[in-house]
Image (cartoon, rainbow over all chains, first blue to last red; front, side, top):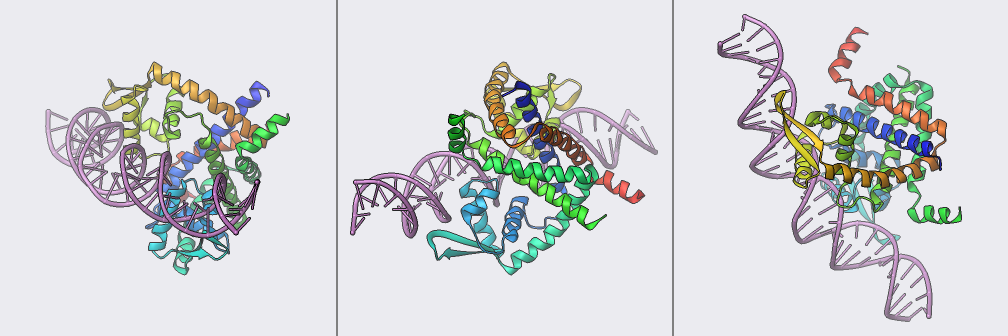
Length: 159
Length: 159
DNA sequence: CCAATCTTCATGCGTTTGCATCTACCTTAA
DNA sequence: TTAAGGTAGATGCAAACGCATGAAGATTGG
């Protein structure tokens, strides 16, 4: 692989990281979160995106948190009546997670306010074309992140 | 502001978040970090980017961590001999942070290995053009994140 | 059919984090 | 000059986190 292509890749990644940290700090500072931490909101949001119940390990793929930490975060949300945990009838090990009505309500409230701030920040910085580019790029990067080291190594062995 | 433009902005942001979480998980799983956590590495890397010493609050802008948490993280790195803390002669409140030789060495080692993984993942997912787009977009978003709510409100009041 | 292995989630425990607060220093203005 | 307010960083403490491990159900190979 070309040396400069690798360098460009690292510069692009660093740029993404900087943007992420910068905007996350700004969003965290907004007085819209109520009693929720951003991580808790992230979980409520992820659950709200799916209609059916989600398994804990499926949730774990979307959230940047260790399995035990996520397990306890969900436990706290369940204690607060925002998430419902039920045994999975198809897998005795599994837990099916779903928002309660209160949880859905809360996600809508906070999510609405948060979406306004996201739109404010992003539309102020980017053109429509850039937003479309970012969405496409993010999708490709996320797909790449899913590739396991095993898959990668197998592929490399072939090359 | 147009309804769909706001929606596109939120979709683009969510795409960035998903890519970030996905790749961070992948990078965290790599066996290249030695005794460093990714956050500790992030601090070493940020210090390595600047030749002169950095103030703690300047470091804080780049790192997604509260001021007390960063203060203690730096304290731990100093205890381990990777970072040097010195009083700022120009500001009695301040601390000037710099890598020690050991810290610089460590950053180089881990950073070299990490850069390989970043290049592997990003070049596999994106074209050269997309990498350039991502870098430009990230730069613009980061600049936007720096804008304070006060500045924004003042600006909005004018509009 | 069943032993071995894997997967999913929970729990014990030491470490790290965030919030609130404190101290020390700097800046501003009267 | 000095009092009032602002800023940089450290510290007490409870909450949350990650790692290692455990328990229980699923899966696989002989």
